[in-house]
Image 1 (tube, rainbow, N blue to C red):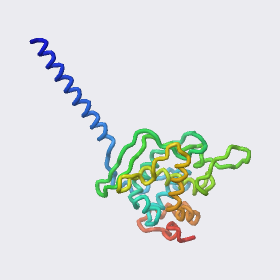
Image 2 (cartoon, one colour):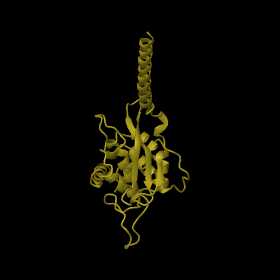
Image 3 (cartoon, rainbow, N blue to C red):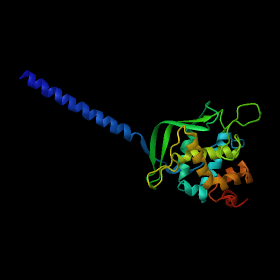
Image 4 (cartoon, rainbow, N blue to C red):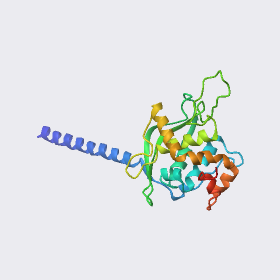
Length: 238
């Protein structure tokens, strides 16, 4: 009888333990989902609006392009993509990596869904901006190791930086069919270049048109409700 009682007790304990394990997994998965804030489409504050950093400049350029209706913003699902851009911008941390890397995203992912629109995107745990790569480093010396271009753009330029941010944004946003706007490319340089080319096919006009507007003008436009020089940002001002 004691043995039978002990077996029943043991089985009950194991069953409860299994339930706890399953519940923890479910709770852990649920913790990786949250809802996007309605305010997440607003421009993030800059550390010094009069002199934005290179990273803030790339963020401002990306924000300004996505804010207006054009081929680039439509590629990312419209201005709702700003929610993903804002989250991405706040995650970026400087580090030193191989010179071929602009931004690297690694680690576990979190899915964020807007209750109002159903717009969904993911975030990686770590987002690193390479101090040695094309985001920050150019090629001032001919005898030094070359930092690669970003598409047709020279490294350490306004165009290279915004293209790099838009590339990474494509890995975060989920299309209505459940696929990502840009497929994962990891450390596959060839696939990464294909993804960059895809971004430029739909965003090239907007990226190239950025030289027609100063950061001060762009900041005013991003902060206002009405489009500022939208013809320039839409690429028709060339």
